[in-house]
Length: 363
Image (tube, rainbow, N blue to C red; front, side):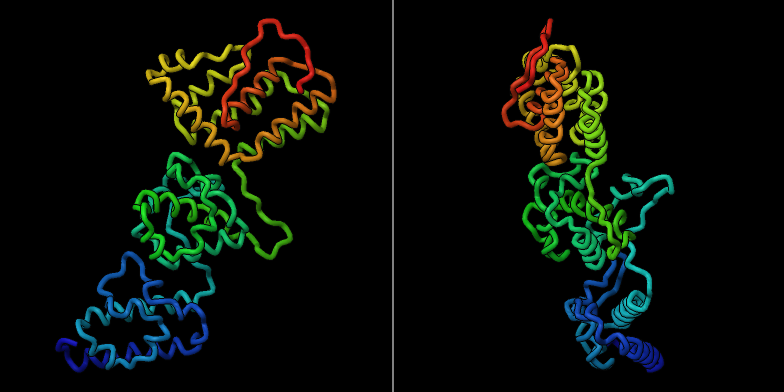
């Protein structure tokens, strides 16, 4: 260590021995096997890099003189190391749980304000925070859920990871995930955003309670509730009902996940008593090439497949009900068929508007 006064050396040494004594009751804690880097925050300064790969257990085996004689270690580095160890002790001794990144939230929201969470920076996430997020998602059985289904908006998530299961990211440490190819700051931010928001939502739920939380996009829960009510009460919806209770909610989600252009495009195809426009008409209206229309419709389908993979089964239950009752509404059936074709099929085949529909049982 560069020259410092004997009094300063004794002060730092005494501080180190106090830290060692406080760690003794915690010596069997498995957290002490984590490297020192695990406990580092983005605000930490003057840390001795030579010790960051050592576990706290390893560091506790050094005496103060050994630490101070390491090359490049001066008063500031020792002081930074001791401050980190003291903060780690406070976390381990505290009965409270790990807190996520500070974000603004109001009591009127179930989840904190999205804009506040969105400001999260990958460089500010610590290994300890990342591990706590991973543990929360694992504890709530979200390992097989596609990452896109849990996202606030798919506009913030790269298309190629929409269907990637959460489990894929549970196997990596923070350092490892930052080292993956194609995982730059924007992609990491989108993943951290999902993990952090879910951690905030789920961390206070009781794991030993006899009920578990099953997460689904809200619009799906609303649609399923309405369809179940229709089926159980032997009702078949009018075109207006199906549009307001199903199509409108889907359109709102498409707008949220894909933007205004996707919303306007899909809306023109799923309006009651309105003939679906041709691709040429849509291309002229939106001032894009015809191939772009097909790309946009394909994106609508991709959105719904990740958001609501079992959508066709639920929507088709309405048709089964209609067949059983021998009632018919050609326009409702047309809307249902076109909804399934546009949003859940790899091949789009639209049913045209019939001027004088005649009753028939849907196959």
